[in-house]
Amino acid sequence: MNKPIKKLASIDEPIKSPYSQESQVTNVLDKLPQEAKHWAESLPWNQRRYVLSLCHLLCAATPNIQAEFLDEYTANGLIAKLVENREVKQKVKENLKRFYIPTELSESLVRSYIRQFYVHSAQDVRRKPDLFLESALRIVASTEERNSILNYILGFELIKMLFKMSWLQHEKLYRLQKNQEEFIDTYIKPIRHAHRINQIIVPRDERLFFARRDYFVQKPNLLDKKLVELAIATFTTEVTTNFGFSIVRHADSLIFNYDDIFVNEQEPIF
Image 1 (spheres, rainbow, N blue to C red):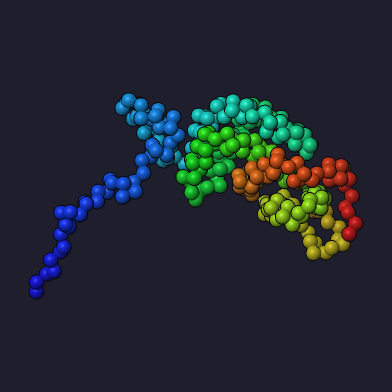
Image 2 (cartoon, rainbow, N blue to C red; image 1 turned 90 degrees about the horizontal axis):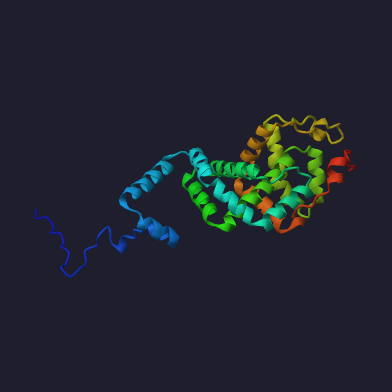
């Protein structure tokens, strides 16, 4: 049986190269800012080898090692840039004071939070580690993204405050909010779930409405290290940063009355 003859490409038909524009191969350098692109293209061969080696090692590293490297490599520059934005920094300071949180925005604290932000981001994207490095690069390159670290600090300090509150104090706080259901679902329920599964607060006689609920007024006993670990495990960097950002933008997005929540310890009458 005669085999069908394959049709040869016409001499007039263009030959498609895998390296042509039609192959949709994008030049990596074109994705860089112009200044960075010019710098990369101007490097002599021996220095280009160093850049390639660094790219290889960084991409092959685990997210936590990436975080450690980026902390050492970028923290000083980021701190200097954060200090420049006095408006956001001042708002964060004012809100820490408003919520009776005695945290000072010192250089050492900001540096530790930059490191924590990288680690927290790495844990958020365990399933997509490439997104972690991308987010870190955005923070270095963008003023708006850098400001997110200040918002993250405020949000994280507030989450730590919520973790240390009793369930009765949670109830007093969420009753002050305009959108109680959203506040409960976003912050209170995840924190109480973490309290339960970590045996920090163990509810007893939970369904007996008029039973004396010792667990309800119990103050969580948490060391700083455990508190940070729980907060990172319970909330993503996005939720934490958005929490801080919402308060920096609109102070009344979280209504707060210290005396009502912390001073008056009596359980409300239903």
